Image: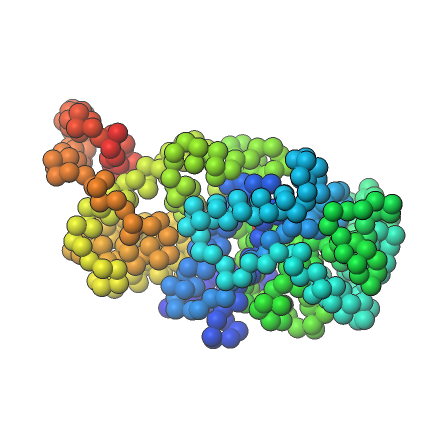
Length: 464
Ligand code: AMP
Ligand code: ZN
């Protein structure tokens, strides 16, 4: 079946075809490890995980590379401000290397909690300094660079189509840049390839280079690492929408200037997690929550967050609120109960899959990862008249994409038959709008030690 993905480069949904049939090259911009990842960042990683799982579900092999930004990302994306790593180290009284190690480990734990498939290659920016220097040398030889007092810069006016991804108005940017503090930059969009360590001070992370001691610019790492592990022409590159205007635009400019070839065929971007009032969740806004404090500390299964992210299309802002998470919690509990009920059929995954529902589910996924529609198909399938054996086989097949660990549900938590009967009777009463009976049955279920929550898909019943 045709797989259509929205490509930020062409601003259209396009049929995806890999460059090399053997494997899809997927590169996802990884975390800057100066602090914990917040659940906004994690929304982007869940979207990328769905993309990867959908590619696999469509029969492609995927080679996935993710970087760890442990140097070079300044507090301002346009090369102004402090290095986030050195600032994090000063904040915590630790070395920049220790900070990197601590938050890399924490990030890896987060993605495990969210059942995000681990990349084939993890690579730290600090492990590819020679490759990054080599890339700057090529750009220098080709005449794309110039030096200022604080570093080596890429001259964006020399790269045709600089704004092909961002479509930003470069003239307006020039106007806006008058207040910018670096008067040596030839164009406001020019960016640092290599920055010098400040004179008279030693940075914790610095390296020798043909231009002087310093550190690489942030964008450089992703170009050097993706080309090192995937080749010069690649399939899909992802990140959050905030990366379009600067980070990814600059990656394209320096990579294509160096190789003379198109860099990635597809660029895909996930929309923000916002909080009530429409504000983006961001560390700089001080309004962020981690997986630990929003879920783990409250004994809430972090897969609730994964489930929640399926309810909004990845290109639309997703709102975080207590109510939206409560709805997701109930939705997941309900789904788990539905699966437990059909699991008694005891099939092995892959044995009995309903072709019609599989087709419908795949159609939703292949329409630019339409997860809300895919989740509606999940409910339609579970409420249909196909056999429990097929329902179980089919949901386990779907779970290759959903990643909700539906094959690992604790059957001990399955509802006893007496409770199941009361639940079925209450469902009927609700359908008949017989609320007095429904309330009576709720009380009976609760008396047996179960909690009842009503959701839009039905009832979630869990042990108290
Ligand atoms: P960083 O660690 O800052 O480099 O960001 C890691 C990823 O999270 C990037 O792909 C960002 O685009 C993405 N991101 C940052 N803030 C949000 C947010 N509020 N919602 C969704 N993704 C975000
Ligand atoms: Zn990147």
